[in-house]
Length: 149
Image (cartoon, rainbow, N blue to C red):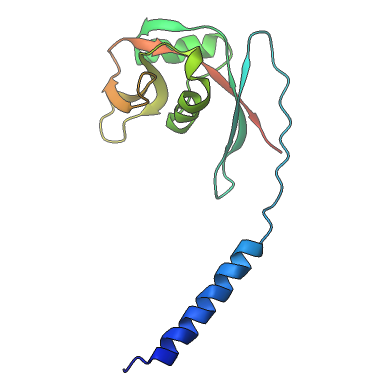
């Protein structure tokens, strides 16, 4: 098949029209009301996945659990009415609430996919995420989620 300049220009025109139509699209509005906060809770933001499967507000609970194993951190978070954040939520916490954390590592609720004795940590010094043996002791913070209707 031979490609001509006219073929290229025609395809370029189609692409320009698609880009123009895309830029004119209106995004659907999402109205988020800040949920009712209890004493010392902090509104972090919203987690909204592209496919719509995750739509919730994230609330940081007061308190800090120092030097705990992963199971201990999970139990502590549950005992105060929350749970550990997942890796996405932990990245959001780093991006928006770094001042609420020390520079160390904090447990997430996410276990390692390949090693059942490991779970993920969020670093609040430089923002790294890494895995660690669940028996090691790291810090923990708890969150709660409020579903966006």
